[in-house]
Length: 281
Length: 281
Image 1: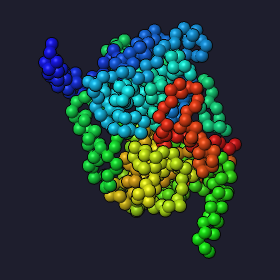
Image 2: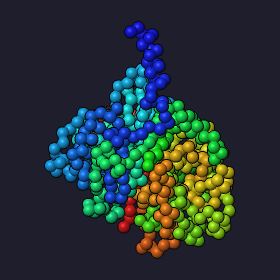
Image 3: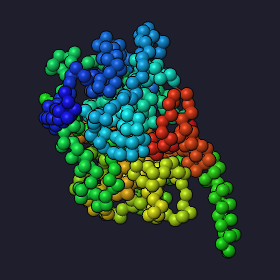
Image 4: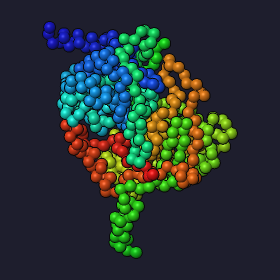
């Protein structure tokens, strides 16, 4: 095919791509969603196989095997992370092999996202793609998932390729210094309040330590599509590729509401920029 | 006094200022601290009369009058704020007059703080002063308290000078777009986990609304020094003016720990930069 025709066809497909443009909302795929049941509530995590394929594959497999059921959140630091996994050195723990890090991925010039901010403090560009907050470097031709609050990432030892099954969910101000050195593979889209209520295991010097028996367990970690239909939580999420979302960003930057009697700087912190979620009954 | 001598004396006083330099830790002044008792735990707030004198004065007076005891957190949005105050239109609510905003304050060239970051996304400089995160503009000769997670600020209507007694505590990614248009007057220094466990009153579209009876009440809001000594929570806080704190910042920027197999950009988000707290038994 000659180059010009090929370009035209690509342009046509992009402009009328059904997934990208059909609606302001897209339905969460239950085959790509995790239901984390805590003693005090339910949490839904959307996985990102398009950015971290091997980590998502492993997490889904482990969830389906019941690997996480009954695990504890054993390292929970307010304003930082809730980390959990099997007991250190247990059979479950040792059974899982180490895996290669997927902290960023190559992009080409045609790769696009919904731009949020140029010259963000930590990188050249930030933007959303399919609801996920990403960083981008056009000098390095790389993109990566950002450590915004509520992302799920695999924990590791000092070596980059040392993650197994232990994971954390970020619960405070974005730990952006972890971008590109940890594998983020999804984000909480429902029940972040329940993540915030997980018992902190770290207390300040001088305060009463938390008893091991009070650590919050994961009652169940399941793939949503494995549940009977009537037990599934069905969600719709803002389609960040729809023109209405770019409009939302632009409005948020301008702050025309009368509440803003003085305008803030016209910049956006992507981790403070909401992607709407609603429930389908 | 001639100018040169005056300058020397000021330099001497600054270099050997007892409050600023004597120790890596300073004790929280109980006459400048609020104990917020929630049904599920205790929260300590350090007030900032040096930056927002009138708001601190009002909050202390209202706490001492029992104004907030039994009030509800009626607007609690995950990742944003927990806002509370008396019932709208109640006698308590209507008794409180509106007050002038204190969202930023003038500084002169001698004004100093512990610099954290130049060219932060939202402003020229960020830094700490007496444990509080501040923004600074040298072109405008102004400084202001930042909307980091865990700050307390007075709510208002659209008019800048319309705050009364309703307040919010930020519970998510820093809402920096509110800097300089809201009066921050303190920050949570203990029990942020309990703030995070306040019942959210806003749910997503389609989810079950929260019943008014389940809203989290403020059991008591008291000035710490009004409590019997044995009931006070005594804390020590990192002295952000001590050279050891500047060293902490510099270490944090460098990330020499082996965990950082690749170094992140040498920048610091002040709202993700901890100021240590420990308990005195």
